[in-house]
Length: 474
Image (cartoon, rainbow, N blue to C red; front, side, top):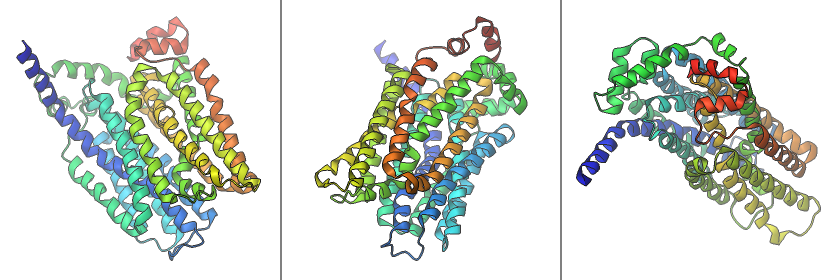
C-alpha cells in the first residue's frame, strides 16, 4: 500500500511538469517586466545627477515624464490585451506582448535624446500591460487546481527578482549594456513559449473541441480529460460574452460592490507610494542624506525583501485571511511613511541627524516588507475571488487599467508636489490616505478565505434574491 501511494504521488508530479514548464517559459517575460521596473531607480538618479558623466542628462521635469509614461503605456497595453484575448487567444497575446518590450529596449540602446527614452518607456509599458493582463488568466486556465497558486506565485517572485537585478545592473552597467542584456530573456521567451500550447479554454470558447483536447492532453499528460472538457463547455456560454454584456453584469449589486472595492484598493496601493519608490528610490535616499552606505547598494538590498516576503504571503493569505493581511500591511506602510516624513522634517529643521541615518533605512525596510505581503499581492488575489467567471477577464482589465491611471497620475505629480510642499508633507499625506484603508477594509471587504464564490457573492450583495442570478454565471 505504501509503495503504491508513493508511485501515485510520483505519477501526479510527472503530470504537473508540463504546467511548470509553461510557467517557467512565462517567467522569462515576467523577468523582463521586472527589469523594466528596476531600470528606473538607478538610471533616473544617474541621468538627473549634477555629476553625471553621461552625454544624456535629464531635468527633473523630463525625469518625471520618463517615469510616468511607463504607466500610460501599461494602460494602453492592458486595454489592447483585453480586446485581443477573445479572438487571438491568451498565448498569442502573451507572445505579442514581447514585441513592444523589444522595441522599448532597442529605443533605449539608440537613445541620444530624452524623446527616445519617452518612446522606450511607453513601449515597455505597453508590453508590461499586455503581459500582466493575460498572464494570470492563462496560468489559471492551464494549471491543475492543486498547483495554480504556486504557478502564479512563481511569476510574482520572478518579477521581484527582475526588479532586484535591474537595480544591481543599473548601478554598474551603462544604459546601453543594460538594454542589450534585457533583450536576451525577451527573445528566449519568444523562442520557448512558441512551443507551448494555447489554453484549452480558448479553444473551447471558439468551438475547437479537438484542439482543446490536444492542449489539455499536453498539459495533463493523460487521456482522462473528458470530464474536464465537459466542465469547460458548461462555462463557455457565459465566458464568451460581448463587451456590452460584461459591462451590464456590473449592474448587479454584488459585482458593482466588488468593482468599487477593487478600485479603492488600487487607490490605496498607489498612495502607499510603491510606484514612486520603484522610480525614485535612489534619488529619495540621496535626498535623505544617507551617505554611510552607497545608495545603489541600499536599493539592491531593499529589493531582496519582497522576494522572501512574497513566499511567506502565499502561506499567510490562506492561514490568516485577506482582511488581516491587508490591515496589518496598511499599518506597517502607514508607520513607514510617517517615519520617512519625520526624517525629512528633521532635515528641514537643519538639525544634526548624523546618528539618525538608520531612520530612513528602517522606514524603507519596513515599507518593503509591509507592502509585499499585503497591499502588494492581496488585491490581485481578490480580483479572481470577488467576481464570477464570466466577467473575471474584464474585471482584471479594469483593475490593471485603474492601477495604471492612478500610477501615471501620482508618478507625474510627484516632482511638482515635492517642489510645492516638500517631501515631508507628501509622505504625511500618503500616510493619511493609506491609514484610511483600515476602516474601508474592516467594514466593506468580506473575508473570502475558505468561502465559495457563491458565498462571497452573497456576502457582497446581502440579498438572497441575487443567489439564483449568481448560480447562472458560476
